[in-house]
Image 1 (tube, rainbow, N blue to C red):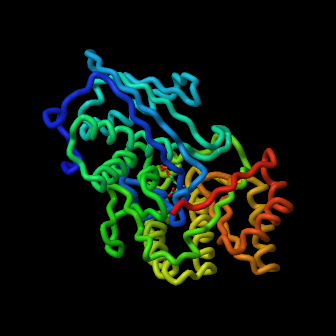
Image 2: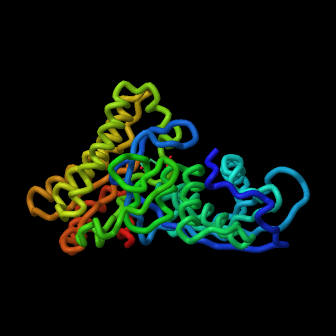
Image 3: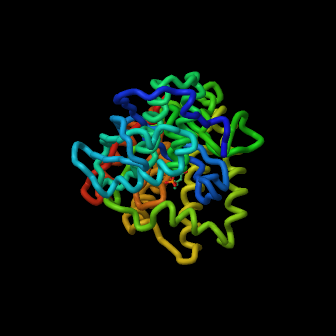
Amino acid sequence: MEKQFQTTLDTIYLLKEGEVSAKSPSNIALIKYWGKKKNQIPTNSSISYTLTNSFTETTLKFTPKQEDGFDVKVYLEGEFKESFAPKIITFFERITAYIPFLEQYSFEVHTSNSFPHSSGIASSASGMSAMALCLVEIEKQLGAKLSEDKALEKASFLARLGSGSACRSVYKGLVEWGGNNFIKGSSDLYGTKFPDEEIHDVFKTFHDTILLIHEGEKSVSSTVGHNLMNGHPYAERRFDEANENLQKLIPILKSGDVKAFGELVEHEALTLHAMMMMSNPAFILMKPNTVAALDKLWEFRRETGNQLYFTLDAGANVHLLYPAEDAEAIEIFIENELKQFCQSGKYIKDKVNF
Ligand code: PMV
């Protein structure tokens, strides 16, 4: 039990009814979180970019009720989704010790994503972060005393209990998660905004174009993926390496060395995929078109010197990372040479959010 995040019913008053809203962006990890301990504690530190155009908007309506237990109805893009409630109930069970009014109200969750549900972009990070922000907002409306900073910290703490990486979607810019001795204020319990003044300007205008190589559900859920790190023969080395990589990234972010940044980030992405290939059971998360796109990208970089790099999440889609200064040439290349590898010829143009 993390006492600092607890609120008790005797310190708040209950309202007749109300409604709050929050918007939360998706994030893409540069140093990957892959593997967790009990209570969503990460096995290594991670850092991600918060995105601009990929986000979830959620409105949470609450009305008082008498009966015990949780009561939640979820609507996605205006449509009632019976199958979504169990995920929210599981989330409520995990956070009920920190949010005392969950059993006192009936909740209606109205949520929508800026990206299509079928696109293969996970909505769990932006979705859980938006939910957590809504709950903390209700807590504030009920009279809980929380400063702006503490409110965000609590939202990040709650979001983590919904979906680990969601704790990094509460803040803009670069967000770190995982307690270590080289980033001040870092914690296993919540995300921490990496200081903007420690980041060279070139990294603040980065583009992230997402090639939708494979739409629809991923072949492996992240829960299954994280669990495969338990007893994995290379797990301990991987956890150490992730922390070493984050340590290496810090001076790179400061100096603006795009080449070193890109090489490190690509290595992280390929390592995550390699870990899955070496798991038991094994999984190959890339599709043939993922490999074809990466091949073309490397060739383009070699031949033109344009600063185009990639990262991958735990699926087949490719996140293309590049600085604004090279965007024009790179976007012509994407349209002419990479679009063909996308399942429906679609990609999403996004940018980092500072
Ligand atoms: O937050 P989860 O449990 O969906 O895991 C996310 C894992 C990766 O996206 C692959 C890496 C990361 O750090 O976001």
